[in-house]
Amino acid sequence: MTKYREILRLHSLGFSQQNIAYSSSVSKKTVNRVINRAKELNITWPLDDNQTDAVLGGILFPKTKQENVKKRMPDLNYIHKELLKNGVSKKLLWTEYMEDCRLNGEEPLMYSQFCYYIQQDEQKRRATMHIGRKPGEQVEVDWAGDPGHIIDPDTGEIIDAHLFVGVMTYSQYAYVEAFVNEKQQAWITAHIHMYEYFGGVAKILVSDNCKTAVIHKGGWYNQQLNAVYHEMAEHYGTAIIPARVRKPKDKPNVEGSVGNISTWITAALRNEQFFSLAELNRAIREKQEAFNARLFQKKEGSRLSLFRDEELPLLAPLPATPYELAEWKQATVQFNYHISVDGMLYSAPYEYIKRKVDVRITDKTIEVFYNHNRIASHRRLYGRKGRYSTIVEHMPEDHQKYLEWNGDRFRKWAERIGSNTYQVVDAILTSKRVEQQTYKSCMGLLKLADKYSVERLEAACNKALSYTATPSYKSIKNILTTGQDKSQSEPDKSETTHNNYGITRGAGYYGR
Image 1: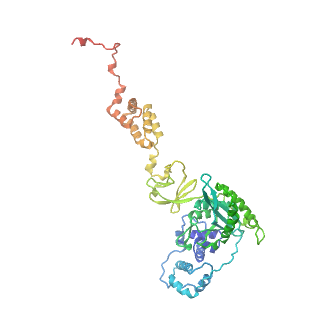
Image 2 (image 1 turned 30 degrees about the vertical axis):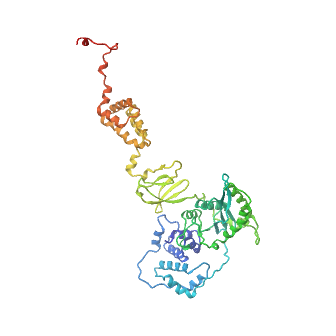
Image 3 (image 1 turned 90 degrees about the horizontal axis):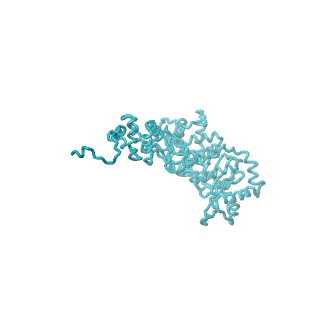
């Protein structure tokens, strides 16, 4: 689906239609058509969250019933000119032609017919040219081919350290940092540190086409930005234009700087040993400062002076807070209306049971989204696995009522009846590993006071405690049912006659 929201967002930031087309993976004609249509309908950025690409598509280009029309012929003059440009192919032009026909409700030619009509005009040339860049406009990023090395102090193993390289295209001012891998956390962290080092943000970010940046779906033209990478770009107010696969000329400055960095940083440190990543990065920073301050051979100044004097004033300011790295996962809301994230359980509204939801994970928060709408937010839990974070409003009403019962409430209820009842209830509550398993027994025990009276329940508990320190609900109920609690309160008649002697035979015995 066409990224209508992204096109309008980038247009509001002042990007050219060509750059918007590259970033949104659509043709320039599509960008122009969307922008003009939005102006006609007075639709401007920012947009409400509920105005998704599908909704905007229906508003901007509503479907209407059209009569069958003849197949549209391609513009051969336009195609001839476009084929002379670097990297443009018939397949790409046919894709743009198909999309343009779809937007205009016209019937397109198949690819074989398209090629047939332009066969005599086809010319494939590989031309290169220097493209002038404006100060502060663009930064290029990539991983360097030659890694650094760290020695494990415990085992002596040599570990590769991957070098991230970011270069301002106008001044060629470089930033380098080493990481133990090329995973998403390292990729995003490198960008955050790079922007802090530059002290501002360039309008355009030309990235490598690695998986941490781009989701590949059938070729360069159908690439989609990684969700976390796109979120980072929105946070810094920049536009990402991924380079094409195996097209190093899409990011020539960083490719050229990688070679220089391999010489002036990696090779310059070849005889030194490093036992931690921090130690290696400190050495890289020293070499990097010297590299940026080195004078150009064929022009005046250095990378540092050119950046400081001409580029830095034109960079967009950094946001108030740096981007917080987020990880996205999918989860299913279980029957207990919780999802599991790294062994911890977080609640979601019970209406979403068995629905698949998107989970945004940061170091501090867990956010749950359904169809791009946030339905829950929790503080992230750490420590022992299996802990729960439950919001009462996410529970069904009958479950919310159950939450009102807890051990302290049962103890206070028993204390109002008597000390013996309190002791029995406390013993029942501590008899199970999980306190909630004893709630039914406590409830049944305390309800006996309604049937038999408070006094009898207290007496029954007293009698049960004379037998065992851990009486059960069943034993108390048996005492009340059989009336054993009554005999305890009545005086024993056999004890009214006292005898100071051990064994005495009365007159009756001898009169037998």
